[in-house]
Length: 252
Ligand SMILES: Cc1cc2nc3c(=O)[nH]c(=O)nc-3n(C[C@H](O)[C@H](O)[C@H](O)COP(=O)(O)O)c2cc1C
Image (cartoon, rainbow, N blue to C red; front, side, top):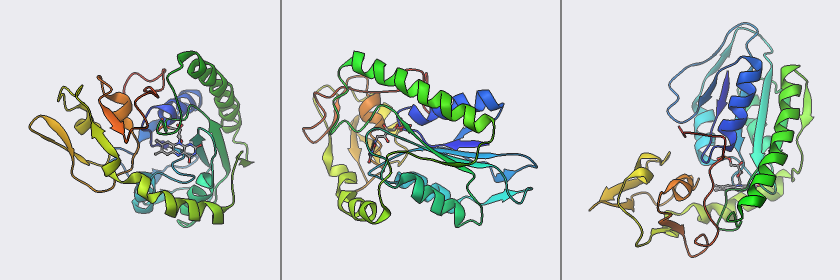
């Protein structure tokens, strides 16, 4: 079983690639309504994006609630964090959560992919994005071959110490305030944002999105998905383009 969380498709792509190679099933944490039961010889994979040098709040909530039960005492458990620039302690937080449930982590990986945090990164140059995507494909291939042969070990790159990431995560909490988000005149009121918000933070009022929560995951999925590119984060995203993993035809 492979469980992933993906806002803009990178982790979904990685999870699906591994699943097809290892004849496994990849399931999204969004709308997940299964048990965390592992049959004999069944492995568990978790694939998540890095958010603010750590885990997306959605993933923290999901993993602290799920009850993992395994027929094997020591199932093969692999963790993957995708990231765009600096991983921080994302894989470390993930490991801590799995170990707190009484399981050992067999292998952990980080994969450098396109950075969907467009308040900082400019993704408007499609050639650059394509090059990065090709590079990620090579990294994914390597991770897949290690997982297919059930390699054990810590293959995480670009990590930072926990204490620094704990501090950064506290400071960056304000970055998840929905007050940063607004719509511009291009909004057609289609409601795609409302239907694609994993935090259910949007309501349509007079056919326009209104944020009804003070904070959200800030995954930016609807900013990247909006057909008119009408949702912006302060004045920092307008010239930075939209991004969805090019291999993914639908999000969950
Ligand atoms: C809110 C947010 C915060 C992010 N923070 C980081 C970060 O701290 N370090 C990093 O390298 N990438 C960061 N990223 C980039 C994502 O980890 C990266 O693009 C990931 O592959 C996205 O996966 P997904 O498309 O499956 O959601 C961030 C992206 C978002 C939306």
